Length: 513
Image (cartoon, rainbow, N blue to C red; front, top):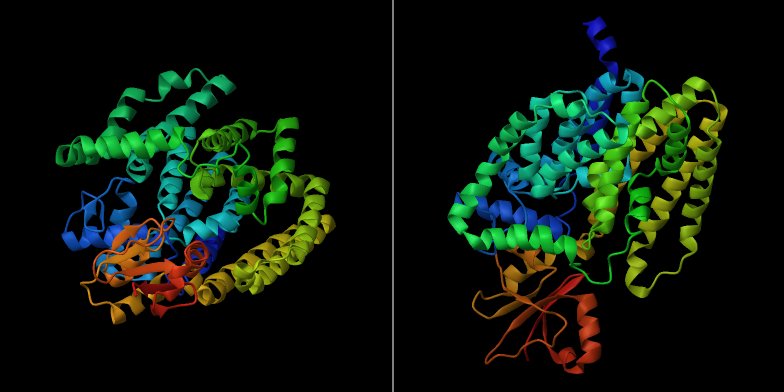
């Protein structure tokens, strides 16, 4: 037993740290509008209908995402009941599996110590913690794509192709296309032409389709052209070629997103790539593979016309492995990572300076959170910088891990719950059940509608809040955020005469006079 514990201590440390970071406090904050309630409500309605095939919301079928994450949420609901915690539990477990798989494969691709460093970087990154504790679909793609890519590199082809099929169920065609295109880029750029003969491509395509294609066939059989036109036509092709939110797509959009999501390790990204570009090591080929993997995802979504911050999540594992290799390289060579240290100091100063930025009236509620986070990340910049300068690598790692544990606990147990009424529609949904007669026409802000459905079971009718509320014959109710109401009332002063039936800190329910 002692020998086993000694040989597996790094993996056990990662498992313990992952469980401590990801599992506690999942239910302390209600589902955050609008994305988390969308997925929670879809899984809830599928389970209530006893339908494991067709995603549905507001009582209607919808074709936004494949079903893998919904299935996981449905299993969680079936085992432990429907709650905020069980909505997020699948993501947390998938995140733990991702970290452990990166470590397991990283030991063989690099070394045990590099694999440990890379897995630790991944686990303690801001974006990974956020996605790993959120009821969104991104962690399903991250795990399936990570398993597929690392297995492909290690020539474990049947595992890789099976997970390509699961990625097809996690995110759609890109789940299958990404591994193929990334491997093709790797083969071309690194001139590994012989892989084309050994990758078992015909068997792999068959296996991937055997895993991932039946759901698509059954959906087409059940829903016909509506499914293909909406899922493939709109959600995959149109959203790539045309912006879902015009004016928000920029070629540089994901540069700050990457640096923010890789905190507190962001300062090592450029130095790591610079060193791997200059030096040839026994790990050069693996590093190039990781760089091609990360760069492909980054560039693909940078040219996409629809851009959301979580899209680049699948590049976190290869980026973390590159940083892990760089940290190990600096430690073993004994050279001070001056560029890394200098960037940490600059980032620390920027974090301190964020408190000088004036906030508008609507954002004042976030001031304590900004103060705490800026201080925490300043500390996690300055102190590790000093330890790295002094050559005390273990102290630097312990400081970062401890700080991110503190961040996770404070963010999910303290700050998000205190901001719940600003971020979630749970309380206004509960208030609606007290004042609503279930017969009066109800119009709901699109942003708040998923949370209203999840927490009250009331759907209402989607209301375009850019327009004045309709006033049909008789009475009508409207559920709206206070911020939107204020903007509308400035344009339509008569709205100030609408009686308020209920309100929370962030939303209100009004009725026609």
